[in-house]
Amino acid sequence: MSAAAARHPVYTGDSGALLDVAETIAAEWAELGVHGSFLARNLDTGEQLGFDIDESTPLASVVKVPLALVVLDLIEQGELDPALPVTVDPGTSSVGPTGLAAFRYPATVAVADLLLLTLSVSDNAAADVLLDLVPVADVDARLRAWGCDGIRMRHRMNHLYECAAGAAGNDFSLALELAVRDERAGRHTIETLDPAHANAGSAAALVGLLRRVWCDEIAGPRATAELRRLMGLQVFTQRLASDLRADSLRWSGKTGTFLHLRHEIGVLEADSGDRVAMAALTRADRSAGLAADIDLAIGVAGREAFEVLRG
Image (cartoon, rainbow, N blue to C red):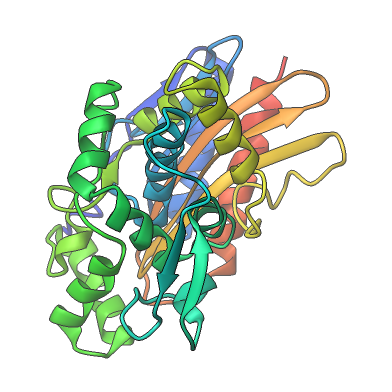
């Protein structure tokens, strides 16, 4: 029996109805060959539901949220100038399909706009330029000081691709096959897929961070307000927000995608006053670069959780 097949979710729910929804979501994911963790929490009542919420998972681009919060707090404290211009050379910048990472020629961008690119289009180059200004160790230390012990930042974004290339050369399809094979076997050929070495976090820790950001209980109030604004500008809406489209609902989120990882965290706010924070961290048991059914299943989970948790 493989390591993946031996897993049995540990459910969380403050009532029988909430536990039923958590079990339904886990079963729907399992039918698609998806492993992972999920947590949704009403920020005002504290009611929550989910499964495997304390399991540490490589975060891919979800880690850009705590990175941005640290940078925004340094800006608020006067330690970093948001208007500081930084020149990025695509020839030496990080790999990625969006933003500065996809540019062909050098560009000069202010720190505040690097934050915008990092969160709105998940620009790896912009994120790594921010990490030139605020080193990885400093970001991780600030998270420790804030009590975010379930979230670790250990490497730059480009290290994801460096480790994949180290295992599979320039063959990204092979890297995906290795990731899926290792998922089934419970091992990690690609170092940045190992929670012990990756930028990693749990659903519980990420939802806890979102709660503190939305309740202004971490960093400075201007930093948290700006983070909420920037997360509201994310252009990728194919996951948790996909089944929650309405004029009366506002989604602020951040996806993370790498090889077989498909994640998203965020907060749904309704005109009724309901606020629900969610974290969906998934690992697919198939070699597919595109998996719309998995994205949709994450969206269904978000809708089911919101409907049962709203007041």
